[in-house]
View 1 (spheres, each protein chain N blue to C red):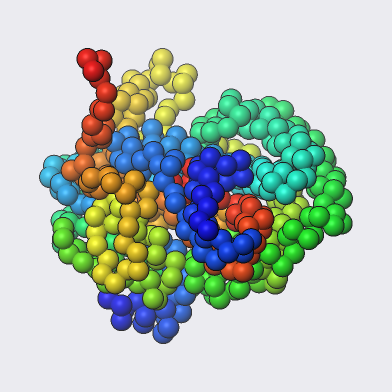
View 2: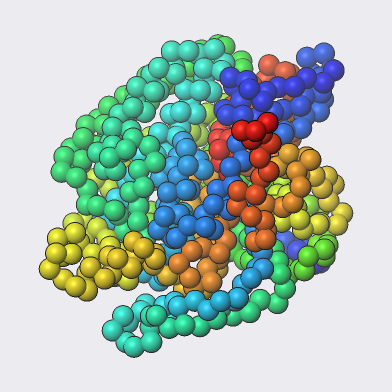
Length: 384
Length: 154
């Protein structure tokens, strides 16, 4: 029997259609139909100047928006050969780790909700809201902050942010204890997750899996450690790895990653450097507002950047970061003009969804929900 | 091309295909752009000729490029880019037997650019509807080019 699962189903994390061939309750075949959220981000970005295009990547993956913004900004900076001041680098790392916690919280809340643990959803969204409060402090908006600029940050960190952040760090480890207390010994949770959705290490690599899915299959790989960017080589953190390759292992990896992220944020808070938050390069960075009234040069620079946009040297780069979902890549081609010639995102969710059919081997239809949930796909990022 | 892919995977250890990115260079170099000249040491903004200098971007060999971004899962995280150039209508041998993850990436390149991959197990559209006409990320595909189905008069 062939059954349509989705496109509008509460547990598809967006608009995803799975065409499932069933033999009784056994899943014997599966095809994912995607593209319902395709909005042509990459095409649109080709029509915008570089600095206007920065707002687009955030909306691609609306759960870990800071990472998409970061990877695009890093690509521009690599082409521009611009040096980012340390305060901006550390602040980016801090915010990205908060985003990782935010993303994992949404994953945990929704994945548990789908397996019947309703209260988990409320607890996770309670802490998630506190993270959004922090984002609101720095960027003025709760999501899609557009706080990263080519060259650094849009503005300096507002007063009081570090205190609020420290308060959040006091709460978060206890909250993670609470989540684990809720499900770790729950018979239903263990039955539904252990030994379900198996993916071997070889399959995971061949299928291009990355992030928590890869680490839950026993591959010790994290770009933050293997290919340090930002200031990851100067902080101390652990990379959790589990051998089982099932849904439960993916849950464990994400829980421990949240704890490690709290540690990284803590270190970033303690060691946050002072000084400028954006590079001093008038051809790329807007001049300080107060200078516009007194300096003709600044006014010209401001006018040129706003109307025409800055120009990025000709070339092509591929930049990758470790997002909450794994290897997030951005391929950028510039012809030397004020607009990108081509922007392509390597979306980890897109690749994760490709592995669904392999994970679904010998699964029951009820496991399908647990497995699709455990891959942590964000459909906006899959379809772009 | 498949030999190069196999060589990269088996001899050089690039076991992880990160991404396949196609690019359309139609109209590339059609007009000169004024850009900064970047140097590895950064840019000296006070030096004349480092900005506002009109020049044409370097020409490309063919219309489309397909970039395979590879990663070696070992210490050092080596990365490589394998680039193939094709014209409209040319076929590229598939790399699905080498890196199974290429399946969806190649389907996306077909869907968005109309580049055919010979030997691909399921060369179908992936993001656009099956009956869609045209390939949206081509440079000659207009923005807002979707026909309006209903208008005020109807």
